[in-house]
Image 1: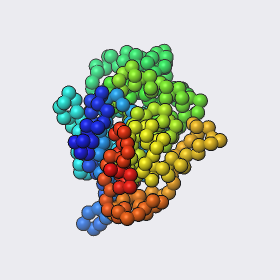
Image 2: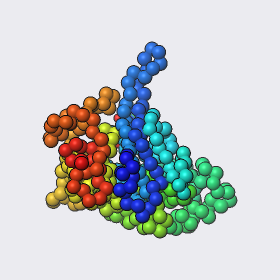
Image 3: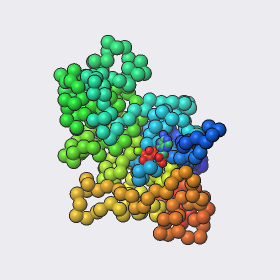
Image 4: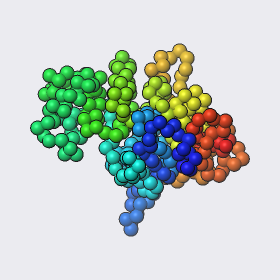
Length: 328
Ligand code: ADP
Ligand code: MG
């Protein structure tokens, strides 16, 4: 991003994370010399800044790179190229405490561990608290997410789906992370408990000043929770801006198709899911020019040139779009 881009973001909260032209390519297969036969181009130039206390929604169909982005933030993989920087008190750091809440608490919680150990797993891994304090810490965090402290010796299967997700949230909180990645946090839950979990997450964010990266297919969830939204296509951000602008006045033709795919009438809002308007093209060989142009209904002259994420035309705030028809 340009200097101007940095400055046009809302600035009541400091930037805590910056990504600059971040790429992640996975080697695929090996030839007789042991060289990769092909590359999966999972992330193809991500420019992004995250501010303390915000919720950034990340949307895009399966395979666009959302989980790769999450793994990158958690330090589980490194960028193939580009820069990822954490910023504390104006100092640049290489890593940070990022925790994650997965879609399915059934498979993300170790069934052999009692709840207090599940909740304090991150502290155990980081060795950031004395062992004798772990039970007390677990009970304290549990009570903040609405799990009774008498239940600390029970096992995950003894709880309902909603309670298990509360336990997963407690685990994410126990080490006081800077950012929590929420990867489809309510999609495996009954409709009736989804709202409770979203409300809990919102409440915790206020009381603990948390920063969320919310990955979701569910537009109503993103609308409900996110301050800003990033729309991803083939490992790039194609649109970035306030949730209101991106979801109500989508500018990129891909965002428009994605949102049109959401049924609006006669369907419960909670059921509204973004379904893929098209098949995502392969990412072994990246398209030239605009990645979306082959399926773009508005493709025209100039779309054969690479597209940069630029300020959106006629936007009041910090709205960004990777389309020459829509940018200034
Ligand atoms: P999403 O979470 O949006 O569905 P992913 O980040 O999981 O997308 O995947 C993005 C692309 O990277 C996909 O084409 C996927 O096949 C590829 N990919 C992800 N992880 C690996 C891996 N470990 N090895 C090879 N390819 C991978
Ligand atoms: Mg994924």
